[in-house]
Amino acid sequence: MQLFLKNQTTKRMLMSSFNGKPAPGGIFDPATRIYCKRIGEKAYYWPEKAYPVDQPVVNKLQELECQTMLMVVVKKDNSCETFQVNFNYFLKNSRKIDWPLRGDNRFPVRRYLSLSCWEKIENTPEWAGDYYYFERSKKLYSNNADYHVPKEAFKDVPDIFLR
Image (cartoon, rainbow, N blue to C red; front, side, top):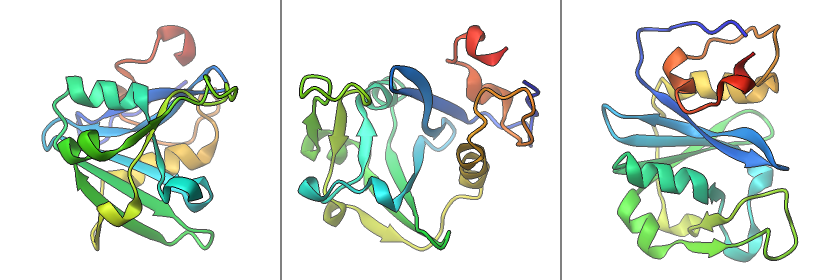
């Protein structure tokens, strides 16, 4: 896989899993301590009135001393709505659901914080766009990658997945 540096960025892609395989879980900017997750509106979980954040990502965010979380919700027409919340507030008020314990092994443990607790904001960080394109390409491990992802984003990804 060809990876390209863009603007000498230090942003890091955080990994999670889906169906037991590695999957992108969002991008963290250590300079601002902001985590950004882009997610399709169909991932909305009605019983919690929330979008999921995977527990492996939350664990890493704690380690990285995250301060702010952004949730960029991509609608069917490709328009976006961006929401933000203080990370410590998220930790204290989100609800964990252990999907494997419930018999659904597609997902790891996930945390949910009602969207009513998030503040809607107008501006999405420019750097979140790279992740959006990357995620939507569905070519995470393709040798024909045509997207630009900062090399540093793969710091925590095992080498075997980057061949």
